[in-house]
Amino acid sequence: MAVDAKVDLASKDYLGITPPISTAQPTASDHRLNAQLGACLDGLAIFEDEASAAERVGVLDTLRRFVREWSLGLAKERGVTVERDDAPADGGGGLPAVPA
Image (cartoon, rainbow, N blue to C red):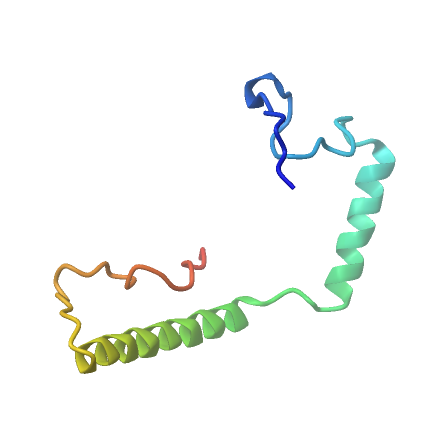
């Protein structure tokens, strides 16, 4: 089902497709509840510590290198010319870099 109506993005006062639930500034209650939620999540220890993040990044980097070498080997087996010097460093795809 096609939609014929065009949305004039310049006339919208919000980003995205759907309007925001609210554009009101946070209240004192919102700030209090946000702090309580943060404390609860911290207490559950669901946030990743720096050591775990570094290990995860290392594993993903190793996986990226394995996949790149495998794909280059497969391309070579199939007779696809791969100019390693001209190829993008990330192989043209893959997992995005994780900010430090």
